[in-house]
Length: 166
Image (tube, rainbow, N blue to C red; front, side, top):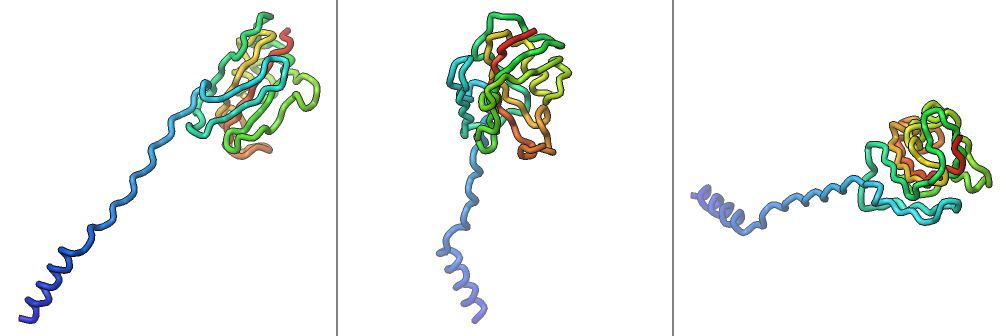
């Protein structure tokens, strides 16, 4: 009889208890950014301002967009290009480097096989002298897991001006 009383009490208590808490829904994944999500202010010949968004994730492939199409010679494999550039790192959205700080152009010789990251060798082909291009370079076309002075597996955002093409 005593067992029945305990069992009855347990049934009553179970009916009065709150339901088990439900796990919180996982946040919706952020979309992958496109070149149109990145803000660039300034005209060719002046140092740009780059704004990397918080609302999307970095792309896994090289992206490029001509912000201004130049009217001079086109960059082809093997070209030499005098450039001005600005670099912002994706993870902290900070400007890391800019040729503008040094007051001189950065020479890119033998495009396609130049001693720079793959994202530059691939990303400047097709630019025209006088043009400005946005490059979003994933880690595998930048410095990868080694970083080399940049955080490992960092996505890089460049704005490149093609000052002179030969």
